[in-house]
Length: 190
Image (tube, rainbow, N blue to C red; front, side, top):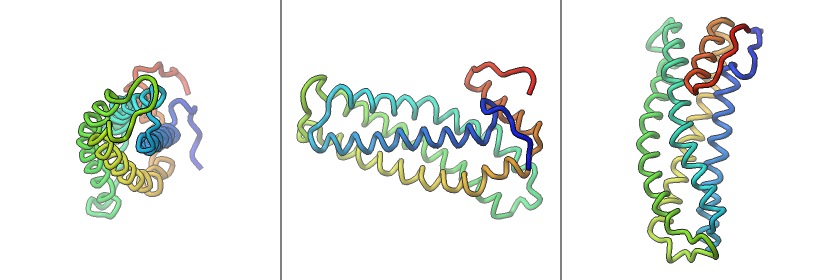
């Protein structure tokens, strides 16, 4: 069993926590779409959508960089067979990141148009929010489905390698890079 790192720099804990936060925001977006269909949109719902959009725009790219700059290159360097199934998984993760980044841009534009049309008080009639509502719901569902599959692969097949493949100091270095990427202070000694 590998030596434990402090939670603030444990890459496995932080990567999984980012996934949980992402899924929470995606669930909130899907729920918001359902409520808007029912004509139950208001300022509170626009704030919830806006928080999710902020997370998608700021935190998700940092998470992708954590994987693409700190984790995946180190895993590749440890592969004995560059043609292995595991190598394919790492490539698949990077392709997902690129596809999802494009979807985020499209979704952000549609969601912002939709939010701008939700009244600050009272209820928004579904007919007043079309066609953005239909596209919003479709894209939110698509993002959720892609992320659910992506997260399953990472958490089942890739993240467990952190404890098996990397030494304590390698895991610590990955965690420190992730922390520094966010501009957070990193404790000097672990």
